[in-house]
Image (cartoon, rainbow, N blue to C red; front, side, top):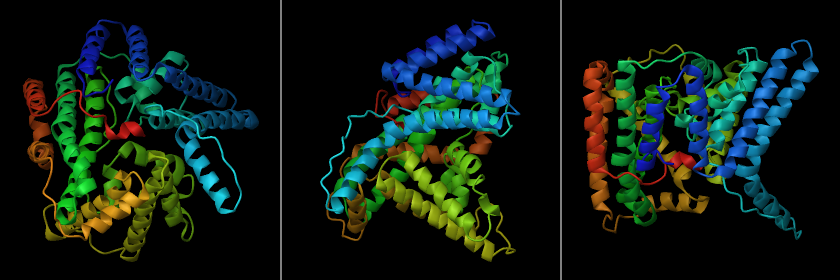
Amino acid sequence: MLFNSVQFLVFFAAVFVVYWHLPRRGQNLFLLAASYLFYGAWNWKFLGLILTTTVADYAAALIIANNPHRPMRRRVALASALAVNLGILGFFKYYNFFVEDVVGLVQLLGMDYLAPVLPIVLPVGISFYTFQSMSYTLDTWHGRLKPTPRFTDYALFVSFFPQLVAGPIERAPHLLGQIERPRAPRREQMGEGLLLLCLGLFKKVAVADHLGQFVDTALGQQTGWKLLIALYFFSFQIYCDFSGYSDIARGAARLLGFDLRTNFNRPYFARSLTEFWRRWHISLSTWFRDYVYTPLGGRHAPGYWPYANLMIVFLLSGLWHGAAFTFLIWGALHGGLLAAEKALAGWRKGHHEPPHGLNPRNLVAVFVTFHVVTAAWVFFRAPDLPFALDVFARLAAPADRPLAGLMPLAHGLGGLALLLLWEGFEDGWRRWLANPWRALPAACAVLLFTLLWGKLNGGQFIYFQF
């Protein structure tokens, strides 16, 4: 059930109407049933996986919390929950990838070996809800959280349908606490939620889908500066696609009385890669920071270990995105460049940093950061390594083909211009639209424009494959 579909809009409208006529316990149970129905609409067989993950972490957290003086029992509970989570994720996402690599390695050694490659279908959203559920057990282990006694509340935390498939990756102290508290509709909440939902649809339908039609054609055919244009547009396509999903998720949650974490904060205005990762997919980058980077020692580790820790985190981040060498290279590029950036910042420690604003130094920094990120996106977008290398080779060739897909490009550029107008002055727009009597008609106008400029039931969200 895609967010950018009539089916979802009808589903959400029905959930919204019934939900606000129920008491709190009824609201939670109804949302849990709606969330399982939403996820089961993709493939009902995968409901067993999300339920297994839910039971494993719920039980492990209770055992950890109820046995403070039995360290062995606590360790077994933690290890069992992590084994279930990572075992399910590893099998469905990485089994064939590693099997093919093992076969290739064995054949290089001159041995004849053929391992079974299974027809595995990747469950949608498995990386997101697995990390969300694991964080609950890990927070309980570290004493940052007391587990909830209600299984249904925890099950709703794992499966809450607005953010189930592609985040934001929530933490229990934030979302589970809201699930356990009473909720009532508020006018300003409704206005903000509807505006966020419509803005997310606009990003996906009026910008990302149109740019995607042009990018898909141009990446396979174009050369020279025309190919460079396609790479620029892919940077905006993936941003509008993914941040659009996050905005729809946050808007739908707000309409139901919940506040989800902000997942994007104008990342292409970043002046460095460090700043970019504070603005892009914030819920994932902070997850890796809190559960991988900091336990490894973080920036306080001795010697060169802080840089090694960054590389480990970004290699794992690449692998989280997909079982392919292109994702590992993408992660290694970001990890290596971030390590170099940190080393340079340490060497230049004490130098005056320019203030935020439109000054030449900041503009150059934004320009360079955007191009570094765009170059790395080539490996992220490429289906395999030869394709990525061919893209870079074709950049050096003269542009000798006419641009194809000009109509989708024109639509995408029009939508992108409006989006830049919004994001360039977002703080001012948000202050003006804080009044629900302005936010509601503005949301309706954005929705109407979106439906006229694009079409629902379009392409899937890019991050659904992760």
